[in-house]
Amino acid sequence: MIPVSQLSDPTVRAFVTAVNAGDRTAFEAVLAPGATMSDDGSDRDLADWADREIFASRGHMSVTKEADGGRDLVVDYRNDTWGEMRTAWRFTVSDGRISRFETGQA
Image (cartoon, rainbow, N blue to C red):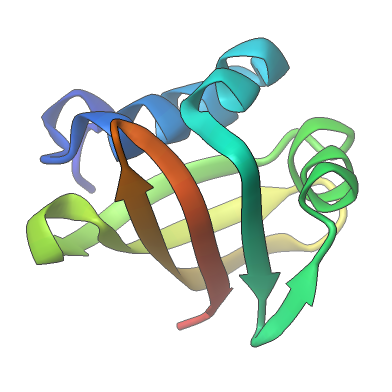
């Protein structure tokens, strides 16, 4: 596992920190206005997805690998709904905020 404090991209590091802390305010602060996301190749409503998959189900990211300067992650993701699964995350960062992320099974 890669400690969150050692993730290369500071914006992605803030995202993972917010998810793992269950901190919705910090999570929303790291997102650019109008940010978008997809899960397993399908675009989703980000607010609804985050509520369901992160906050209501106690989501947690354990990063196992990073690439592309820390903007591509392989994560053991777990939550109370699905248990644990290996997932891939790709982030688009603009002006220090995440404008899009894509996740799905790795």
